[in-house]
Image (tube, rainbow, N blue to C red; front, side, top):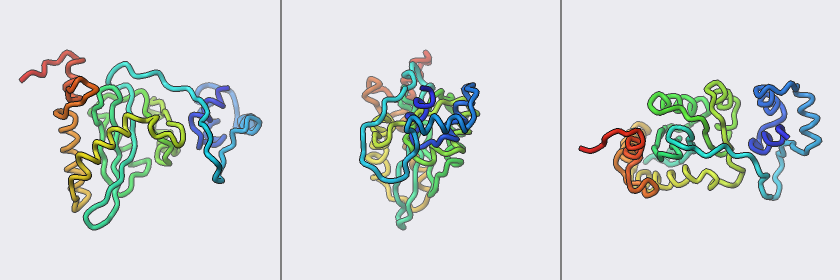
Length: 230
């Protein structure tokens, strides 16, 4: 049952990677035994195209009760004035709605993602859970090992269900509408500078309807009992 739970929550993981996860949890199993059960339960990763079907029910982490517990991450793409494409790593706190990271680069492989998140955690509290889609950057061995060493639980949305990560999807829409669509970037440096300015304004000034029209930073300060009056 535990192997099935792990396989359903990480649909692109093969039996060897699932073996590692089981061993981390203390299960005395080797890859041969896991492979046998893996096949008997029909958990083999399919590489051929197939018709979509309803995703298997999977266990969800407990909902966050306060800021700093649960982050959501994703990517947004755009292009510079000369047509070169770039990506933006976006990360927000699910409770406070604070944007904790906007990292700009032409490429953002797993090691660049972990480096950006490390820098964010120097400023913000390390989360207990990170929710993402099943992109290769997030399902890679590099990202998995990084999360394991930090003690962070990875929560993957079901394939084809991006709104299961609705917090970041909503944020990405605001980022595109209020920032990316409003600027014509000449360079990656300019894009990073403008996005960082927008991130600070979003956190410290922009009213958020789900927070009673308070800015995320103001909401967090009130929870901590900090006086934010002028």
